[in-house]
Image (cartoon, rainbow, N blue to C red; front, side):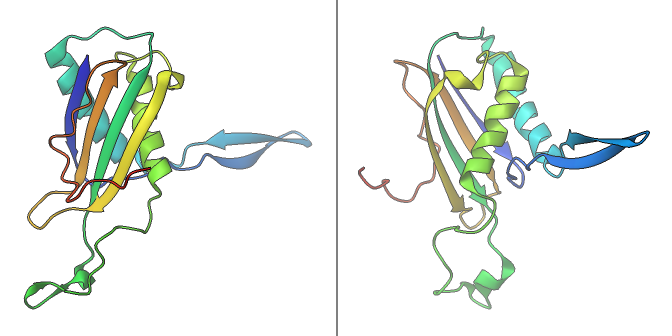
Amino acid sequence: MTISFQVHGLPKGQPRARAFAQRFGNKYSARMYDPGTADEWKEQVYLALKRELDRLQVTPTLGAVRMTLTFSMPRPKAHYGKRGLKEKAPRDQVGKPDIDNLTKLVLDVVTKDGRVWRDDSQVVGVIAFKQYAAEGERPGAWISIATSGDPLDVVRNDLREDPPEV
């Protein structure tokens, strides 16, 4: 089984849980909360996943799963001049958000949905890329999930060149 879908929007990383002290009489207790800074992106990932899963009518797997993720980030306005993209504009997106936080958010959304896998510990391989969106392309993500032995769909990834051999 291979599930591939595109998400449009501004990719955000999974925010770190925050702690605060809550007072109970003369004692304090630590409490944790999710700051909610990526809620809109989580919703967009969930809706795109839901559309594809409703179309495919999948059942959760208990086996190993592999993923490819390509995040396309918008270019800052400073990268453009009067004649389009500046020659000195960086090719690679090396700033925030971190690729591990981008990936973690997608894993958490898919796990919470529960229709692809039972737990994200079933994910045995992830290939993730972060790039600037090509001119005229909307920012977002291309996500492909495959059970062990099935091909990952990388056709719609606009990687511009092959990844380096490891």
